[in-house]
Image (cartoon, rainbow, N blue to C red):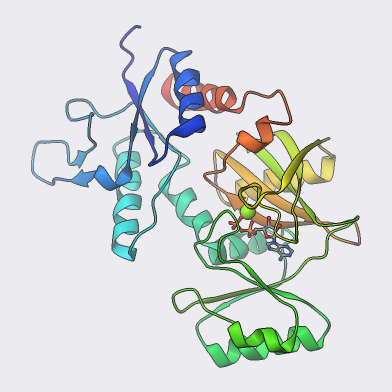
Amino acid sequence: MRDLGRIVIFTDDPGWHGRQLRTAFANHGYESDFVSLTECRFAIQAGSNPVFIPGFEHDLPVAAFVRGVPGGSLEEVVLYLDVLHALKLLNIPVYNDGRAVERSVDKGMTSFLLQNSGLPTPLTWVLRDRDEALTIAENELRAGHLLITKPLFGSQGAGIRRIEKMTDLMWLTSSRGVYYLQRFVHCAGAGFSDIRVFVINGVAVAAMRRRGKSWLNNVARGASCELIALDAEMVELAIKATAALSMDYAGVDLIKDQDGRYILIEVNSIPAWKGLESVCDVNIAKLLADDLVTRYIQV
Ligand SMILES: Nc1ncnc2c1ncn2[C@@H]1O[C@H](COP(=O)(O)OP(=O)(O)O)[C@@H](O)[C@H]1O
Ligand SMILES: [Mg+2]
């Protein structure tokens, strides 16, 4: 293999996705290494590289692919994001970059940015005060709506609850002091489903319907996947949502509501694609590697 430099894949759990990416980068002539962000650090001193990445002591990577940012204390997570920000400032492409990861990991910011770009997203409240949260929830229930509560930093359906009746308010819980409340969107058609669109560099490459056992339609929660045709409205919204959060690529979650309108729920900056690939013959890792290499490394 020619020595083009190596790519770092930040992950704590390389697994299938890691292997797919490694193969895809190798096909472009790049070796890649899996590194946990927990092992990276700053060593700030004049005249030497301030960012320490295990295995990249002598030469920093030619690019960083972010497959996972571990949870932790605020300080720990800030350090991981700082490493991503610093690499970008050192002119190393970071895919998706720290800003994109920051914006999308924070569901409150995602909702704000979607709305701020004029995109359809459910009514959402993000606040500290418990009494106000209870009042909002009571008003919603009285008006005949159901409410979803989510941890601000959750993923894969973790910690999401549905408030259906007044007695459910007993366990209206904040996530570390912050309430994220969102009006429940009833999906069109029978049963429960939502839609995941995978966008890479402004192109929707595939979409699937995810059918949950209940209203929670995450693949990690046992939802089944079914390939669906990309329709113009879905594609336009998914692409605009990805742009609103300034992402190179994204997994966009939408729900088609009972009036037939698409509503944006979430824009994932570190989306998995194993479920999607199980129902289509698109090689997502290849498309991601092609995009990263041609747009950022070999420019
Ligand atoms: N406002 C909502 N109305 C209806 N269903 C929702 C709503 N928000 C989330 N869900 C369901 O819960 C799932 C997980 O929510 P999401 O915001 O994507 O969080 P996560 O990061 O955990 O995937 C969605 O894919 C959808 O099935
Ligand atoms: Mg989601």
